[in-house]
Amino acid sequence: MTRLQSILFLILWVPGLALAQVQHLGRYELEHNWDNIDYVVISQEENGVLIVQPQLKGNNKQYPVVFHHLDKQLNFLWADSLTVDRQLHLKGYHYVGDKTLLLFQNTQLNRLIKLVSVDLKQRELQEFEPKTIVDLDIQEFEVIQDHAVIGGYIESRPAVFAYDLNTNKVKTLPNVFQNNSELLEVKVNADSVTFNVLSSKQNLQKDRTIVVNTYDYNGNAIRGYELETAKDHQLLSAVSSSIIDKEQLVVGLYSVKTGTFPSGFYVNHVDRTGRQTMRYYNFGEFNSFLDHNGERRAEKLKDKAITAKKRGREWRYKIDGLFTEMEESREALIIMGEFFKPWNMSTQNYMRYRQVTSPLIAPTDPFYNPYDAWTRSNFRSASQPNEFDFTHAFAFAINHKGELLWDHSMDIDEELKGTLRTFGAFQWSGADAYYAYYLDEELVARHLNGNEKERMVQKLRLMDDEDQLRYEKEEFQGIVGWFGNRFLVYGVQNVKNPEGEGNRKVFFVNAVAIEH
Image 1 (cartoon, rainbow, N blue to C red):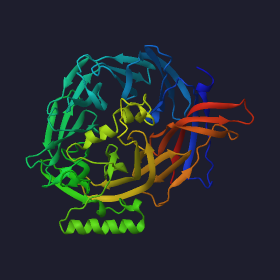
Image 2 (image 1 turned 90 degrees about the vertical axis):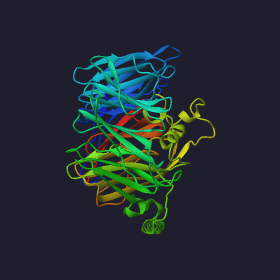
Image 3 (image 1 turned 45 degrees about the vertical axis):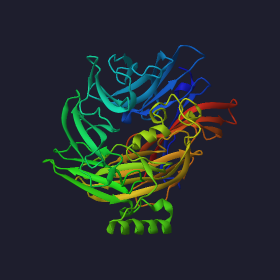
Image 4 (image 1 turned 60 degrees about the vertical axis):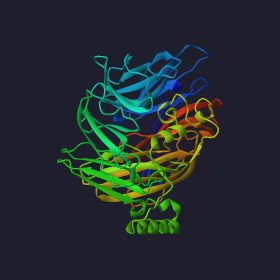
């Protein structure tokens, strides 16, 4: 390892400072050069951080991928590397049980897949190559009990496979491969032995609804049911809770009539007998969802929305959202998402349209930088959008019966260039929800359900008090949730130290915490 690869500076927070609500915990730097095409920062929760660094060198048929492991103080622990074929690119990753599993797929032959397991405790890499997965447009990747769950599309129909890492066997999940259907979610439940697969379906009334299937980790079906929706109510998206005492909740956006923008959120509760209760929350019924419009306009929109619902009239709002998995506690379930103005929307092809504007390469293929991916003619035509207006981050809590408890939001009001992807990151700790994003060399954050409504805006700390930031490369920057109230902010910077030897170009990871 080089000297720069093990640099660490722990910045202590001094109580009483004006900036007390953002605690700067530390910074790690790696030397950056032209053949480092991207960096992937993976939270390993309280076990630290994994940095994945692909390096393309010339026109070689293979390229090295370097793995850097840091502890939760951002101290360097160890590094290793492997070589992969040039056609293989990272499609997803999942951390669970002291292991990080990475999924690579051949961009020319989709049926060729490689899985790499990074074992933190044993400090070793292990490779797997399933042979019986057919051509799959991968959209989902989860890990449960030494099984990789891989979901996507085969000839425009959703399909999900469970791959046993121990036996090298692949099982095709039943009840998923359907016509006129979209894959919405694959979620590992809190019991760590079952998982949910959510997909869309047209019911007998030709309305779009959701099918919820639950499987054990071997891919055996446990139960399945279809959400009961009111006539002309289209269920667009879906995130699910775990099954708790045979009860479950599903939440997402709904629209009234077909081919229109959403009207609000639906919340579906199924009890232990299978009885469903569906609630439709109009956007105007939330305290803060429309606040990004400004106080006066927000109140007018709320009045229009609530009046329309009372009179049984249609009301819709031009908005769309990117949701995290539902957070769960004994007291509440938390739904969190970032919202943006969509260019267009199709009710029956809701997810497919978003894949056209945002190919999978953006959120889950970090080896193709999403900031400039839209410039590649093989992924995007000039007529497709390449800027997205993000309006706000929003979180709300419901009890285990689906009743609304609270909601809070934070304005974003920024444009995102390139392909559609998450703008910032959420964290949930105890009873507290946090949101933060990093843009224009500033960290912007808020304790969402705290007393303070104002956003916190701060610069990141550099390695040394004498360091001066010369410029930052926007296409490499990002933020991920870590654990508790902590976030990891990363990017590439050119830093000058007046007392040092010229400038240094580095990839950095800063650890921060939002205090209250």
